[in-house]
Length: 205
Image 1 (spheres, rainbow, N blue to C red):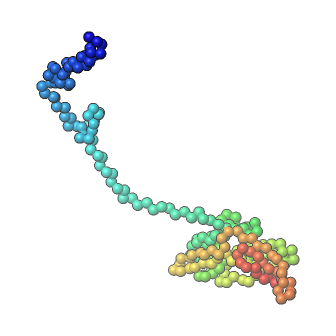
Image 2: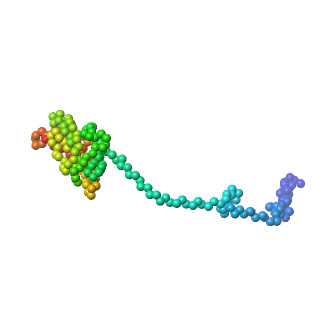
Image 3: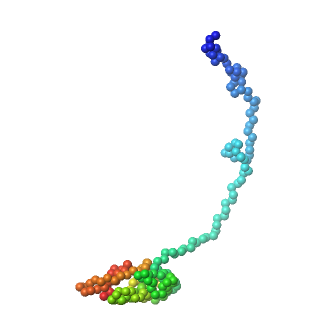
């Protein structure tokens, strides 16, 4: 017999599982045992995972009945800021005029007593009319601010409102003050003007 015929005959011969009546799966047990049931396992827990005792969700903690009011802190301090300090009193934060503190300032506690509702506060700057050098700086108050004159300049800091015994300061100046003097002319005559960041140039002569 040729080799090709032997190979063809071997391939055509039935395999044992085709003739033993048991099929490709082989012998099977009479019954298949049902898997054990674990009452502690959740239905969605995979088989073979670690079993842990059932633990109910903790009771929610009681809501706090304490009401906390945040403390409002005003850190927005600036030169010459006015702060109410009583029925008619105002405390000023230190401010500089051309780099120098006015008389009485130095500890952020300069206090001024106002005469009534609508009264104004100002810084008075005196200077030498010849050299234009500043000679003094003082803070005062009154119903109206005086007009600047030669040798004496007045710069508004703010005013106060007093209603029902409550004083409310209103700042017109926020920050340090810098002033300068310039020569000019009015109607052809020499004149001196006061310059500041607060107002338009003021004629002082």
